Length: 210
Image (cartoon, rainbow, N blue to C red; front, side, top):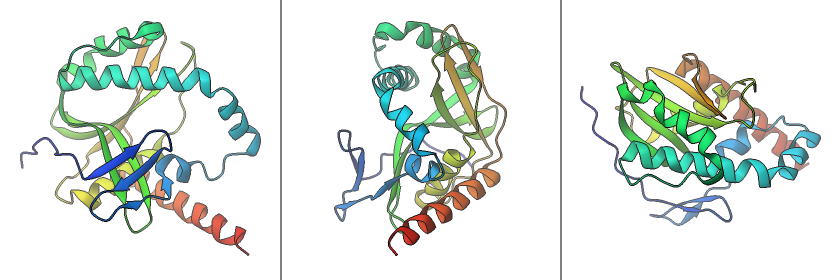
């Protein structure tokens, strides 16, 4: 079956509030995929992430935007201070065999009130592949598991496009001077990881109400 490029869903994203809004009903999603996936993050780690937001947020937004422009064939975006991340990312041979189906695609889970945006969906050497882009501050930074997050996107994609079967997930690690494409991640395992995260997240919120 030939899969065509995906049309945008009727979802508005409020960047300042980081909220997804389902336009047909006006429903505002209560949670994001990222929030659900970080249910077990320690208070210290969460505080440290917030304290360094001025470092990682502009880097992440810029590199993601540059990749989006590249994959959609739009005019090249200015990498600014992040050319060391952007140049090896866009030059990586992985993209030569990647046929784009969707980029920065907004989705939601209306039943659980969750919103999220996948970075890229495409066909890679005959496989339908979900790609997540991560930026890290140093060239020798270690990768970490993105299975939970991938599972959130796979689940929501199945809700909106049940005819699309994801064969494989991969994380692309953009670091200064070098980009690495991660190992293949099993979509079924990713979905199980996200489902487990959701039940723990929902359970922790339920217990907090009592």
